[in-house]
Image 1 (cartoon, rainbow, N blue to C red):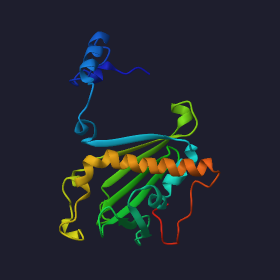
Image 2 (cartoon, one colour; image 1 turned 90 degrees about the horizontal axis):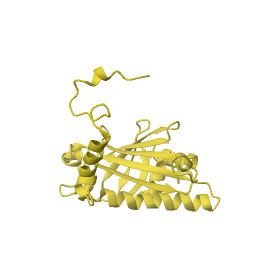
Image 3 (cartoon, rainbow, N blue to C red; image 1 turned 90 degrees about the vertical axis):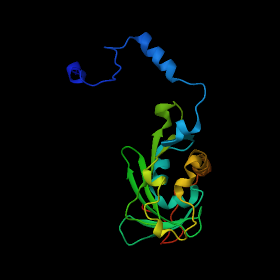
Image 4 (cartoon, one colour; image 1 turned 180 degrees about the horizontal axis):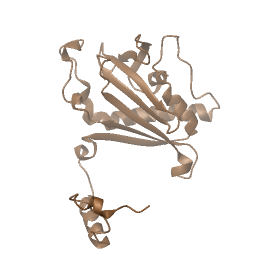
Length: 220
């Protein structure tokens, strides 16, 4: 199937082999490549991290899709319980005192994607969305295990709390205040995830564990 170039003729700014020679492309790409990048330029609008984990991808996906495991590998999410709304759970983000976090898990077994839809203080609009994907490492790195990617997009609410009246106290810091530390903080949590999955897989233990109690856990 050949694309009809006439459908692209009126779109400005396209660089395609039909209108840009290889030498010009290389020159443009070289100009766009820097020896060093400011933190904000790399992580200002989006924060993506990735890791190879020595655990079969099916087991890694199964672990992530069961949201109660957030209480194991995240730094501060604890004490999840159902809200009464199907699929919606509430817990505590102990990063800040008395702060509730609401979570819904959207998982796709075919693509092995697990998205955590979250928000502080309220469960009506889950705008903090953590996009995770498990990729078979054999496919992309020619080695056993999993490659896990994790992306956050800088939603406008990170800058402005949409519901300040729901904060447990007026001086409670807002989650967006930590955006510049997301790369480092999420890297700490990804390393937790790696340590847990690799330890259990290496030791012949079940990678996924049941919730500690009947009321503990996020959406499964």
